[in-house]
Image 1 (spheres, helix red, strand yellow):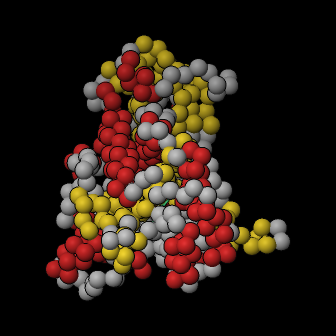
Image 2: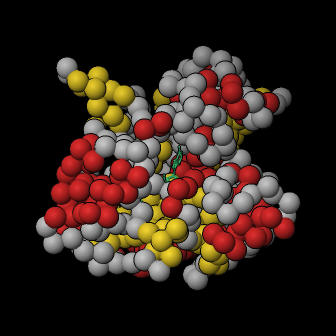
Length: 431
Ligand code: 4AD
């Protein structure tokens, strides 16, 4: 028999609880007792207990975990089985005998380096299944939010020629006979696209040659970015609150089972409703000084400071009004207080820290050229970005949201790697 025989999803079998059906999946657990073999069969929808009479299925006793099976049998209600239903197997229609499986989910769960080495297999685990389903919902909800709110989805290039977020973290790529870079952010392209479409967004990979290994940095991450014409910083903040709260609501609606499997406390998620707290950079420096941090006005707010700040608040914080020198050159300076920019970050609670960076952009050509020079950069590298300011430029604002970081907080992961199927960091490019 070929393994394509019509089968029903395990979730559907658990729902039906009776009747004869065919199931297919992989062996998640196996116990051989005196008279019976118990197998927990897993598919993409759930797990079910299979009960096989040992005398009839003698040759299946030594099946290794993750071997694949197609089985037919009767569903029976059994309160002691996971999901309350088990299958009494009548025939095993197809088997793929796996070699001894190198991962024991219970034993290795703590050894993240080993699990990264066998990532191509670990993504089958119940834990990664739950994370990846939540990630799927997160991406879907971001698209849904932007599309429902009048944004057009656009597709900027990944090969670029000038830094958006500083030269230090650019990846060089040999591009025929010249060197180009992998994009750090699609922002400049979104800024170009607002002149035709006014409200645009994209979800795309961004690349940063981050030399340090931290729990929230990848070298390749998924970036949801948006840009709106005729908009100030506060307009972008409202979109940021809107998209985060929509994503969280969607996950709470659709992924309770996965959150439970991951042991995630849901109270912090339930609280993530607008308005988020607003904290100015000045206030943040005060708070941090009172907490004993050696930070002065003008210093950047680093990861430790962010963690300390976000621990005091039970929902996300909008931190705004950063000094010019700690933010990228494109941020518009506040005309009433030029030493600070119309920029903001959104920090997630429970110590997770920054998930969004954005603000209002400089929209006048002269002001932009001056600031590029003040930052020690070469206006020629930004020729087309400056050009955008020559033809009907308007005030505009936008942001970038780190989708992996948002997912990390939603699932309550300790490390950003735990929410990405094949994470890339300074040491790891395989599997
Ligand atoms: O604050 P960042 O660097 O802002 C920008 O790139 C802007 N150009 C975006 C824009 O306005 N269109 O990055 C935005 C977000 C961060 O808040 C963070 O969530 C995420 O991108 N991010 C990373 N996520 C994982 N690994 C990294 N190395 C990241 N660098 C930034």
